Structure formats: structure tokens, C-alpha cells
Length: 472
Image (cartoon, rainbow, N blue to C red):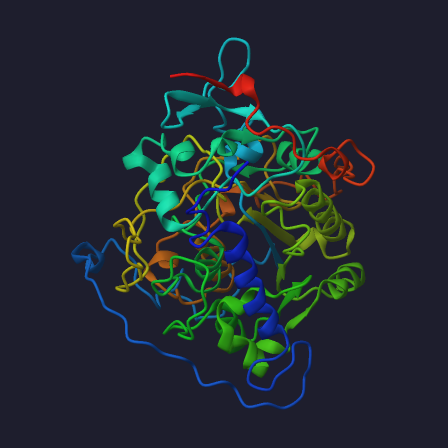
């Protein structure tokens, strides 16, 4: 299948390698500091750039919480407001929508189904045909889906969500089943999931991860690396200020590199360690108060054109390491995906609180838009001894809900308007009853892409299959 011309701005493959090359350069050391070292080194001066400002008149109303506000203003910043939990662990995978990964799960707001249990979703291809939702013919993806600003807005199609195929290709209508992702589906069947978790903007990986780290992308809408740092810092700066221990356990590239100057700051750099150390720390009961887990972005992040079963294996490895470790009784784990990756989803993203007064930095030819709307839904859920049973949260979340959760736990000041007004994820746990999952459940074994019938030996198959395409 020929990839869409607008995928990932300059082409899906070229843009992905561009992002990797920059992060690889950062991993070699920025400002004279090498990742994983603890040697002395001056902090890199925080970058800056001139940005235009826009004003949203309603954002000064009393109903909108402001940057710097505390979850409990009666208590000092840094106070522990949720003593039942001592560790928060976050794992963020890449590039899948809720419908693509969990639309056929049978829990939450998945695909609408007909009387035979088949999804009814379909989008026009612009050539007189409809492409219907279909089970992917293999575990493999191609570069047939795009996730840049224009592709996202064309897919949104003024709130109809009918532009996915025309904006990308028919591959966007594909979905996976438990036979493809047995561990991920077992996890989503056992613990609470969220069926209204949206990515933070209709844009690519890097700006969405910036929202996870700082509550804003500083105008960024695509995978690029300007040197500006957020005026209120990142959540990791906040952790350091209030003495909250943290580590970013990375596999091949630390995504903190979306803010390149951070990798040159010793207080940040010394907390970025290889993923091997995570398994040691989890087994020893020495995980920090906040943990970020990162897959291998070339192999196991589930970004196209990877075999998604490697991601299923990674999720199994890290989740089981947490559940089997001695810190499990006091742990809250959050899993999600950075953005929808170009895959179809039937729920239009709702309005959102703009994080700041910085408008989107749109290149020529971009569709108009602002940071006042979320991106498409992504899979997400909570894993904890205190997790509710048989529960699906319909609360509207985005990636700044992770910020709001850690801010609520330690009564930390909000970084932007977005995280100040976000919802934390604590509706998915119950601290009033005996923990139901105190004894960690046994989840399905992960997929084995090496030995199973997969695209490694068969190829990705015909995408979309002829049966999925009908006259409009």
C-alpha cells in the first residue's frame, strides 16, 4: 500500500527517522552531559524563542483554575494527600486509537455493532467507495496511516469523524483482537479502562508527550525540536523542587528529549537510566515515587510499521514486574498511548481548555485550528491493588490527567491551565474497601511474534481486504 503523501508531515518514514536521529544525538550527550552519568556539568541555559500570543477571554473566569494552583490550597505544596499510594508508574505506548486497539473488546464505548456483532463503522474513500472497519490481516502495520496536524483535522471532518480514509488510506479502518494482543486485552478486561481518554491535541508524538511532561506543547504541532522550555518547567523540575524521587527508565531513547535542553541538566540527566535497571529496582522494591517506562521506539512501541505483538510482550514484562514486586500493595500504574497514530475512532474529540496563550506554530498550508480541542481517543487504564472491578471510566481525560494525578497525590502546583483543569484518574480506584487486587491476578501470556503466524513470515497481508470495500 502506498503511504499517504501527508503522513507525518514530510512522509511517515522520513519524519520518524528525523525524530529518532535527533533523540539519538541527544542520547550521546547535550551540553557535555552523557546520559546515565553523574559527573559534574553545568546546567544548559534554558532556550527561548519569540512566540505570538493569543487570548482566550473566558480563561480568566473563576471557574478556570490557573497555573500554580494547588489541588488543596489549605495544605502546603508537597503534602501527601493520597497516602494509600506510594508509587505511581506510567507507561506510554505509541500511535493507536481506542477503536483500533479495544474497539471490539466488549467493554467501554467501542465500535457500534450490527445484529451479527460486526462493526458498522465505515468512511468514504473519496472515489465512490466506503471502507468498512476490518480485522487486520496480520500483526503488522504499514505506513498507510498518518497522524500529522492536517491529517488529524481532515479525519475529524468538522466533528463527523468521516474523513479518516480520505485523509490517510483504508488501513485506518483496521482493528486488532485478543488473538493479536492477548496480554493487552487481558489487562483491559481485568482492570479499569477509560473510554474517554483523548490525546492532548490533534498532532504527532512529540507535542503530545510534551503535554505529558509539561501540560503544553509550547505551540508545537509536529515532531520537531525547538529549544524553548516551558515557563513553569516540567513535572520533573517540580519533582526535584519538592524532593519527590523519580526515574525515566528508557529502552533505546528517552522521550524527555522532546525538550532537548533537559538532557543537559544534571538534575534531570541523573534520573534517566536504562530499562534493565527498572526490572532490578522493581524486584528489589526500590522503585522511586514516580516511574516513567519507555518501550524500544524501533521495535516495541507499537508505532507503525512495527509488529504490534512486540509491544504486547513489553507491556506484559513491565506490568508483571510491577505486580510481582514488593511495592505492589502501594502502587498505582497508568498505561496509555501518546496519540491515535492515524487509526479510526468513532468518538469526536471534545473541546479542551487551552494550556496557555501560545497559538499553534503552523507551517504554510496548515489547516486552521487551536489548542482548544483534544485529539482522538487512545487506549488507557489503571492497574493497582485498589483498582475497581468491572469498571469503565467515562470521565474525560487527556495526558495532563497524569499530571493532575501526581499533583493531587503530592499537592503540587499546576504547570498550565490544561493540567490545572484536568481530571485525575482516581475515580478508577477505591480506597474505602479492601483492595480487590492485593494478590495480583494472573493475566494472559503475551503474544509471541517469533513463533506465531505473523507478518514476520507472511507479510502484512492485503490492507484493506477486498471484503471491507463496498460502493458508497
